[in-house]
Image 1 (tube, rainbow, N blue to C red):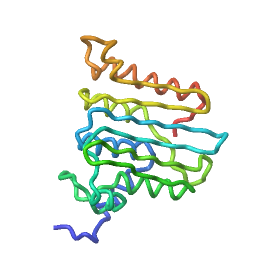
Image 2: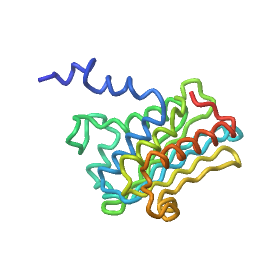
Image 3: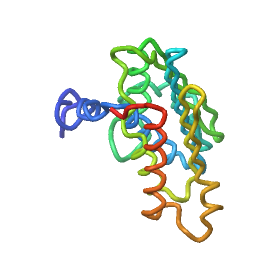
Image 4: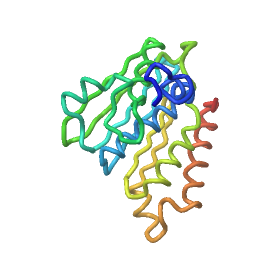
Length: 201
């Protein structure tokens, strides 16, 4: 059995090393929402150089957290998952925000869902890049077609909204997770990022 102090290869430090951009934090927290049986997950990313702020908000209508879970939300060694021994999504996002003169908050109610908000000083030297948010969206939608996802990207006065509930209605008999649809979603996000002069790092 691996000692809890031996973290170099398989433990939390290995997970930390993989979390080099914010899109991976978003993916991890969205997976928590999926595990909490959410039927709808909203991911909003707002970027403003005018206010020198980057904000990320992830909300769901899942099971929510009780007081004990909320108390441990920032603890990387606490998780309700059975697939790994540590939960890193919320603690690492909180740490990333605090390192950039920002903060993270968790609002939750048992049986009604959770909302996680994180803010970052946009030009802070230690701010992690957003990363490949298009692939994050594609992974979530492709793997969970039964869940409705809302992605809202905003930069200054320009925004892009992708709502898979509306997409499903428009697509009718075409699955939202079909390869062609997933490619269109990825291309739409990447094209919008390029048009708004956001460089994918």
